[in-house]
Length: 312
Image (cartoon, rainbow, N blue to C red; front, side, top):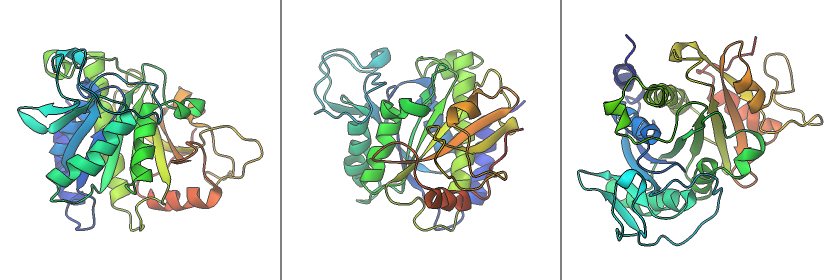
């Protein structure tokens, strides 16, 4: 039987051996600090050998985009009653201080992780990388115009603006459930989806971190990765990665992939039911939409080991 954490641990020896591989990570999202999705990703990153700080909203803050506000004392409990009314604006899990909440928006949580928490946990240093998500898609992914409103994309974009490379991840399956579901109902759709997407993210990062490119991602650029339905595609080995566009543009000339200089849209990639295709889109951290051909080409070179696939 496939076990994602065993597979992830096996990968650690190979890709953490190189001294240049990013090791210190901040993990954020917009769905909240206590969801099954983000905790499965945290566990998977730790099992793979990374040093990880989780810094995410205290409550579900989906759809907040790049909005920001001053963190405030909790006037309602954290999601799933993980902290009581009156808790401080920023707090942590008493049994594991690497698990942190911020009672504000995704951008604020990501910024707190980069500027404050990382310096506490990483010997005064900034993180090497920010992982945002995977977002709980519930069949609504961070594709097309939705990147403008996605807090998951907003958190990754904020990290990039602060000089930290970042990727936003989203999956079509799963629901907004507590991290306790990972133990209490490990065969539930939400728990299985959380573990599948966490494993795929580990594999994606392994390839990206093994690149010889410097910097890891061009300044002001993030990647937006969307996974198809885990119910339809339960085996991580069946997933294929397809370079895509955020928005359809008949006048754009993209990097040539699969014999064409016109990339498919990310929405078309994840909706294709003829295979298990995950979209990989290169977007600007400022506009949150497509970059030019030259920047796309640089990312193709960085992801050479993935490998990128053509849709059948």
